[in-house]
Image 1: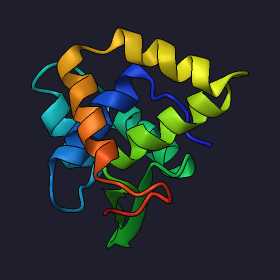
Image 2: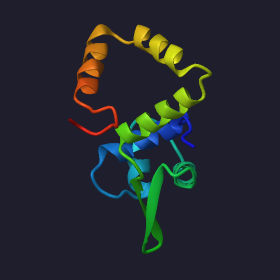
Image 3: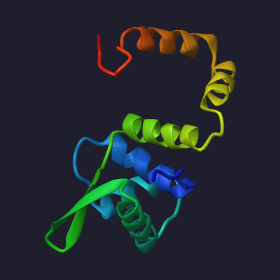
Length: 124
């Protein structure tokens, strides 16, 4: 199950997704501390929670863990959107309401993306 991320979880994941290498808690903490004061244990707890939720993977490196995203930001967002949609009583109506809310240029990009995929989800 993919859950919506909390405020601090989003901040941590924004950092982790922006880097192309495994990260330690200390690296994330130092980056976050440019904008706010946080304790090491707070960031460590958030990253441990994200690992338990399956959002981050980790591997032991000496005494510390090195963390990586389990999915790209886009994959995570798509999985969350799919879960939200699955919770709807009427998926078609929910999708139509969603389409009414997005800007026309995003709707055009969505049409273009759909045109490039076969009904089975594979690229044409």
